Structures are given as C-alpha cells and as structure tokens.
Image (cartoon, rainbow, N blue to C red; front, side, top):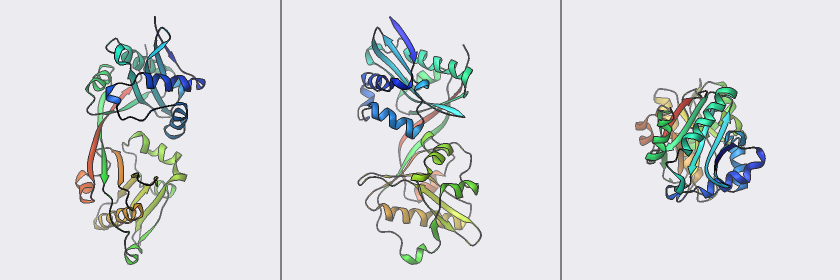
Length: 286
C-alpha cells in the first residue's frame, strides 16, 4: 500500500534513513546523511521537518522530500525516489502535497536548485509548474601566493555583515539559498569580511568563512561599486583573501547570473564549475 506523510521533529532518523535508502546512481559521491546531518541542515539552511515528506510502499520508505523554510520562501533541498520505484508518480505527489500545504500555511514561494545535468529531475519540476528562473554557477579561484605586501593593504579594513547591509551594499537580487540575505544574517557571527575604502565610501568588499585545512574557502558575498576604484578594490580584496587562504582555493558557490559579471569573475582569476538551475513556483491549492 502506498502512503505519504509530512514529518515531525522526532522524524529526523526517518528522514535520514529515507534519504539514504533512496540513493540512486546519480547520487554517487554525495556525502551520506545521518541524524546528526539532519540536525546540521536544520541549523545551517533552515530545514524544517514539517516541510519534509516521506513516501512509503508498505513500511518501506521509497521517496523523500527535504524542505527548508524561511518567512519568504521554501526550498526543495532534496527530492529522491528509490530507483525501483521511479516513474510511478511519487515525485509529483511529494511536490504537489508540499505546494498545497504552503498554499494554506505559507510562505507561497517555492524554489529548487537542481544540477543542470539531471534531466529527469528537471522534467519533474517542470511538470509540477516550476519554471526556470536563473542559472547558478560554482566559481573556483585556484590557490595563489602570499598575501599583499603591507603597502597595498592601507586601504583595506575589516567589515561585517551589518555594516554592508546598513550601507545598502548587499542588494536584493537573486542569490542561492545558502548565500542569500537571510542566510548571511543568520550566520554573520561566523563570517569574516574585508573592504576597500576610498575617502568617501566602501568601494569593494567580500565576506567569507574560513575552512578546515585542504578545503576551499567559501565566499559568501562580494561586490564593488561601479568605476575604477571598485574594480581595483575588488582585485585587492580578493588577492588579500587568497593570500590568507594560503594553499586553499576560493569558492563562490552557486553564483546567480546577475550577481557579478562573468567577465569580471574571469578577470579575477575564477574559473566556472558545476552549473545548477534555479526553479521557482507559487504554492497552489488543491
């Protein structure tokens, strides 16, 4: 017998079990998820158990949807169906059920970030009234040499999320879920920042998180005001950051198309990596 149900806070073990049991060949290389991993997703990206669902055939979980919720939108973080139970409508039912629930309880906006190469997943979201809203790209900058010489650092100073937000420099454009404004605000105590100042204002900036040795340093936000000082400033900021990272590369994860110009990223030494598709939809009642 087929059954579906939304989860509760005491279902973290079930969600981890279903997620792992529904692993398919396309998930090779994806890290495993356990109960502690579910707790980490709750802390880091606002996973809500009540926005998650599990599909059952008898007592066996055969499908799972992991949903993250913030006041303005819900992210379909993961959607998996066991390889032996695909093409039977489970994915559509999970997505439709979540949409119907959000049409009543809110928030009404849904988004998903899907690897561009996963054609079946793209088809499922398109069939469930999701439309392609943007393309997201991982940008990597290989490790560079030492930090800037002291003389070049005179116009650089530490900066934090609050200062950038209060100055209107973080903008309101599309960002991936892990780096949008609510995510930056939530994790600001873990962020380091650096800005290039002219006599009148901040010209360029970056916020990042330091990583364990051997791992890329993720850039959470970066930008520059138009003009030559902004261009120079962003170069200096990133060169200094690369020096601090030492042997670790820099990573700008899932950059939206309007976040920073591709040509500028290439000038700064970044190379493109994996591309994801950002789908969007509005909750629909039954």
